[in-house]
Image (cartoon, rainbow, N blue to C red; front, side):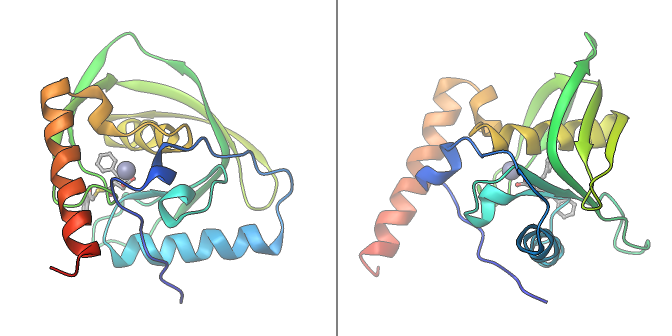
Length: 173
Ligand code: K1U
Ligand code: ZN
């Protein structure tokens, strides 16, 4: 079991676009296993590879409740292929912006495609929380954060708060 450190705002790597996975190697399988350990430990319901500092298009998701059996899903090179016109508002959080939650409006239903660790291509449809989570994680692969959907006032306020915390930590305060 390996828990990797999760990078947090204002780390510039969170704004980087991640590269597609060309081949599913042992390195990718180890990355996915470590991401699942890291997500369960946090805890969270999703994690993108860039959140552990690796700019590769890999995402893990598990929406199972603590009392349920785990249902880990690994998405390699995921893409949204269709999204509904109907929207849904959900209160989102982000492990890279700890303890900050805000409502975000996104398409309610999506279709998406991804590769599994076994190399199969899967086409899936999602609604509700899963649709929100997949869209949140795919945004991470393009350097987009959920705070980008908020007003400039709210976004600037949260960025400033995290910049100040990073400065204080660097100064050892
Ligand atoms: O990508 C991330 O930072 C993970 C994030 C995923 C997410 C949450 C909410 C809406 C969309 C995407 C999280 O998991 S934040 C933590 C969280 O939501 C949670 C933690 C424990 C139990 C249940 C949820
Ligand atoms: Zn996030």
